[in-house]
Amino acid sequence: VNPFGIPGPAHVADLTDYYIRYKQTAEGRSPDANFLMYSLLTNDEFKAQFVNRYADHLNTIFSTDQVMPVIERLAAAIESEIPRHLARHDFAVKSMDTWHANVDYIKNFADLRPQYTRENIVRNLGLGGTADVTLNVSDPLTGSIQISSLAITEFPWTGTYFKDVPVKLTAIPAPGYRFAGWVGINTVSPSISVTLTEA
Image (tube, rainbow, N blue to C red; front, side):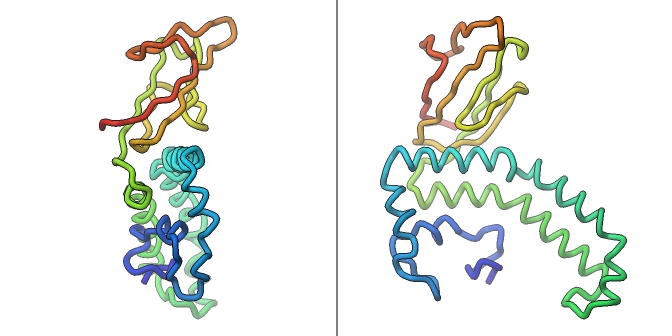
């Protein structure tokens, strides 16, 4: 059992199911504990916002590329203090080898968790999978693009979003420029909604 009280390793824990299940069965929780979240997800607009916001976070602050350096920096900052900590306190960690193994466990979680989280979202919300979205501009000095809630300013940029859920894209011209159009999309509107159907 992992720290969430759900069977299996922590990185595979299906917290999506835990928090949106129609009738909660977890020990110590009311069967109706998820009523609000379950009810909100029956609204297509809320569901799209929820799923896209989740994708935004998985593409940025919870991505392995961003989380791993934080773990390494924090571990390096306290490593020299661990021997004194072990000598002073009688905790489950008894050696530097165990401490290093625990740091490796956290790194492994950071590496694997995004993939399993996406799989859990797809399964529990009945989506068709995920697809990578690559954004680019003809000249980075001429403007930027907002995808969902993310303002993208460095190009090319690639993120993973969910199929069957409309994703909003907005072209934002830099001062002195105007939006000329999208490549491959027959519209001159700077704000569009795209539903991903293929990988």
